View (cartoon, rainbow, N blue to C red):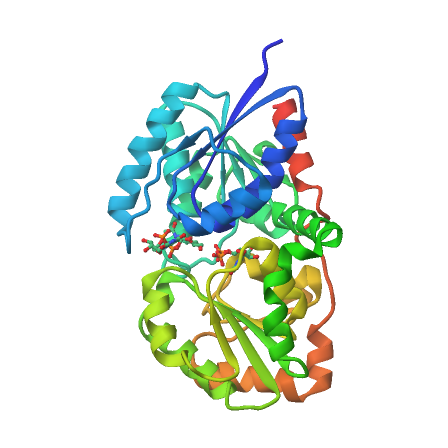
Length: 373
Ligand code: UD1
Ligand code: UDP
């Protein structure tokens, strides 16, 4: 019997992290032929994940340009991925999440009537401007996909409410937990994979570490400025240290470098590769972020996370009590962070591990669904 050819298409850091467990599972299974197309929407941050996970792309469109616009990027993605699908003639195209690459990958497959499996399906904030443009990317993929792998029941419900055929919707958990288990096991075997943080660990010994990430497009401008102000105010305390791997997007770097460089207890550092970021998660007393993935990782690790966004399509972390929406008002960010720093009860209430996003078997579940489809 011929093998089921699955072409996995992705282009950014979070997609790579959430798809390497699926690619590993497809590679292990004789029933499948796994092919990989990366768009290169991200370059350095994508390559960091490819290197640690050992995923070798069969196609690399290398589309990243400095500060690229969404329309130029999307046009290149659509034609580039279309050509790869023509060459590969896959049985399935797999896309993950809500990026421009995922949306264009789904659309290019649809134009060729190749069925799409959507990993992390059904996330909805209900607001097309938050997150922007991801909310629309997800909805487009949701109308195209033949197989929807929802991380949670909440996400599956959202799809059914949009009249997606219930038989095509499956709750599989989120592969981010598979990835977290994989990296934790690697770090146990080889702690040296995260050794570059040792110097900061020493420098900040005795202080509570606040891990920070941010990059959302809807926060560019005022939001980024407010986040920087909040961090500067928090850095005035002598019991904290801030470790902030700064996203490579120039709209993030400009503001953060101008506002925060040179502050003694703020480490503005380059994006961490995944083992080092996993180490930072473990070291952190709490997290300040607008990232989607970090909102999923923090509950699994029992790390309080303050989400610097107006809305979230990941209500599970909030329901579990580990995450709280604080928006992008500097006063609110500072007040909520200080509450966690100064009130041990408030801290303990949030610092409990939960697994709303699954048990780390998502990739195997998705492979089983593809085999049965
Ligand atoms: C993209 C996704 C977003 C996802 C985020 C994860 C879209 C529209 N946005 O946002 O959903 O949450 O990735 O991080 O798909 N850059 C580099 N090197 C890199 C990566 C980015 O220099 O490795 C710079 C480039 O100047 C690039 C810019 O960042 O043009 C923006 O990258 P882009 O992929 O368009 O958007 P992100 O804001 O990273
Ligand atoms: N991450 C990383 N290095 C960093 C910051 C984040 O490896 O310096 C990982 C993090 O563990 C999570 C993912 O990147 O799995 C989140 O990516 P990002 O915040 O860029 O995108 P989002 O999840 O918001 O789409």
